[in-house]
Image (cartoon, rainbow, N blue to C red; front, side, top):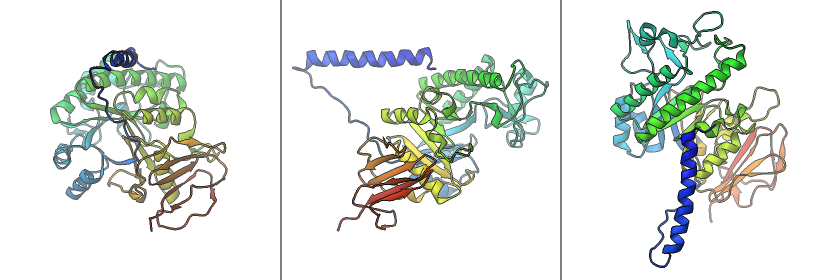
Length: 412
């Protein structure tokens, strides 16, 4: 749910619009009304989730040229400043994990925390001063994430932990000159990292509610502080299709990130999970406002997944919808052939056909996505070709969980 402050802001905005309209009527004879242009719904921009390795000089130059947003580890301050120097418009965010502290080498150096952390609270500091900030299972053990050694679940529901995290991260952002924070692991369920039940809760559902409520509080505390300082907060919101309203609530500051965008679910139906639940509806609403960032990632193992990821992102066209692929990690800046498609500006909203297929027309082309479990016969608009310039048949058989991206035929 939206915080009281966020609701007040929305009501104030509505009141301001109504007041402005009333004033405009009375002043129409004497004062010109100055309005800005409506934000254009553009084809997806590109961004880089560059947390896998230290960027090289050529990668920094390429990132400054191609990307609207870059996320870097906290110790990459030199790369951040170089990006700002090469392109002052690029938003460079620092990676910080909401939910864990870590004691692998690099996060801990000898018997002390590193100067720059991937989290907001250091392992050594918590161990020595606040051991109660480590989440404990019903078995009385600290919770280490499966598949991520030396990542330890923290008590995100503890107001003292929340404040320590926010104070440390906001202070670092202001001190170093980052544009904001990419807050990882704003998750809905612990089960993807551990089967543990948190002490004090009866079952996994209770543990998950405790975590979600805690992350709601962390988001508001950190988001308010960063917003007041003119900085961005973008959380990596996981499994938002499971909880109606969660994407909208957690993207209310500078936007949100979806790390598993446009992928097939593992439920055996073959459908795309992005289009399940309320998530896609909420993402469409966010994109339509054109005020905040949608940072979308599709993990690609095939051409189909790359095509589906980009086309699904194109359904969410806005001034700040950015998409990237990852295969499988984040060590290199990726560039997709679809990002060279030159679709231009969306000339209509995304449309859902009776068959369940979504499509959208652009000034430079057309996209369609089939999120269903059955193939669908489509009739594309005339005058289009493939990205390779090949002719398009009058009807296309679009398979389940697949997409098509077509562009205008070159003028003769």
